[in-house]
Length: 122
Image (cartoon, rainbow, N blue to C red; front, top):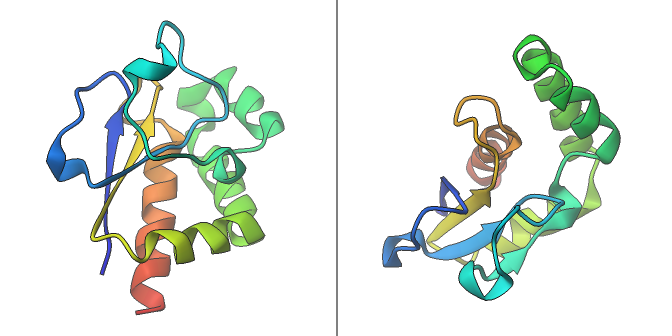
């Protein structure tokens, strides 16, 4: 079974990170491409621009609704299904995100989604 972790892109990479996947649609500010160690940039499984922009207008108030909307996108996404199959081969996958908030970021929702899919299809 694949273990899913999350980590900010600004944290140093560690060997325990395993397969590192950048899961933001936009490149993080101030980060040079050669400075971020990642194996895959998975733009196709990020929140749509519409819900991402709407959420960022008031993250605290919109967190729960955003989580529901993003989960709905993931459940209907062929890219998310393909991603689950792709990462299944790795013992550890670390999702890299740039958000400043450790409590209100889409990587948390994605991690829960992936954990559920990995457990239900074992």
